[in-house]
Image 1 (cartoon, helix red, strand yellow):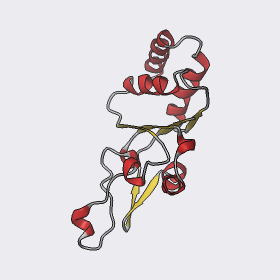
Image 2 (cartoon, helix red, strand yellow):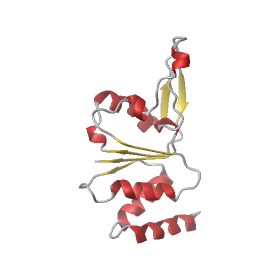
Image 3 (tube, helix red, strand yellow):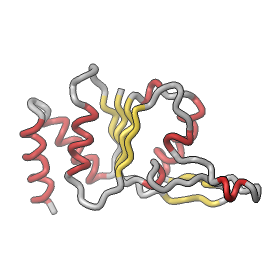
Length: 147
């Protein structure tokens, strides 16, 4: 397993010049199940590094979104399940959204609105999401946020 991570790091270092330390920390975050806040100027490759890193991981569900003040909870966590909504059950379809991902990138998180940030807290902090009356355990290993 350790060899695989070193090979991944060597490959990523060929793609990104002078980003060795950031790439090592990103891989360490994946191993340790930590979240990462990438802060930097526009155009330095924060999102691209995360995308390349996630392409190196076989079998991982990946979710990515560049946020703005107009993004809603539906855009990130999933739309309401209308078939259950008719029965007065307020659940979301979370497949292929953040609550279903192993690795995620939420770019420009500082631009997101208050209701969306409030909905993200439990997923980020406890890796759980309350979907209707059921609490779902999220498989999220690492969340990369950029600003």
